[in-house]
Amino acid sequence: MASFLLFAAFTAAAEIRVVDDLQRTVSLPAPAQRVVSLAPSITETLFAIGAGEQVVGVTDYCNYPPEARHKQRVGGIINPSIETIVSLKPDLILLSMEGNVRTDFEKLTALGVSVFVTNPRTLEGIYSSILRVGQLVGRADSAGRLVHFLRVRADVIRQKAQHATRRSVLLFVSLQPIIVAGTGTFLAELISQAGGENAAAGASSHYPSYSREAVLKDDPDVLIFLSSIGGSNDELARLYPEWSKLKAFRRGAVYHVNADVVSRPGPRAVDALDTLFTILHAHDTPKTDP
Image 1 (cartoon, rainbow, N blue to C red):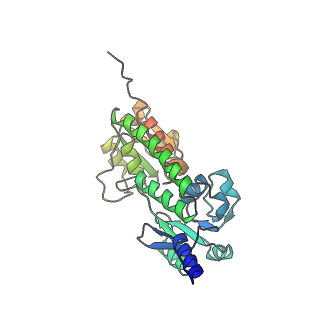
Image 2: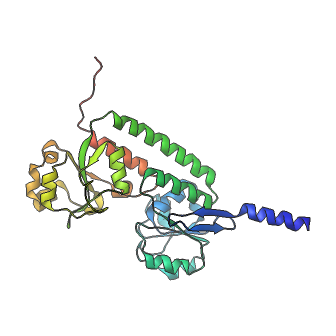
Image 3: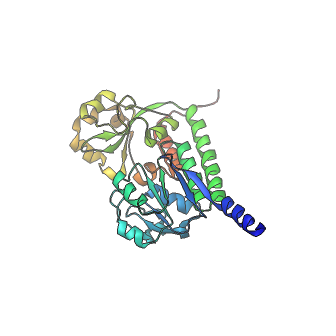
């Protein structure tokens, strides 16, 4: 009887219980050993905390770190192959509310496999996601160390941004149609913490459609384009010739950034913050001591 009670106590202590961003309690009897990741940011998190060997499946878009490219592909973010996922016999499936769709979530939860949903829209949300994923895969210590490192780096950048000139900025996520990063998004948080003023902050949606005239009216100090949408400066001049009048064009403050780094709410988020800080303050006049 004593042995049974001891076993029961050990089992209860070993159980992992984590609340995801849908406020669902996800329970595992032990750390997951066969994990399917359905978002590039999640895949990057798993490898960053040392759980790469536990990953058995990733999406077609999971391209970082390079080791992730050797994992079994399970399809796209919005159309993963349920059959392929089942064949991998996962004990945990991780997905994102930002990219994955409701119908896929319902199909995956119906499989009887533990499903954890993450939806970070701030740096703090990213840190929380990393810590919870770390718990689920038995890498809580390394997840904690990573989050500490990221916090320290982000704090240094924020402190520099507080003493820098704030610049108005539009960050484009699409060119045809024109769509920019609005409020309540991970990208909007990065802009703010890097010392920028989001010119689209007054928009009514997270990723509002913008007219070419609205861009002229805002006339931001800096224009930033994700690399995934193309649009070299020459192409922009052909598509929207009137934009040559914008102060950003006149000042040479038009930038194209790596979408994989800047738009993924994962462990490279502080790299993105550093990139945006450098861009926003590239034209600041250095302060000299009296």
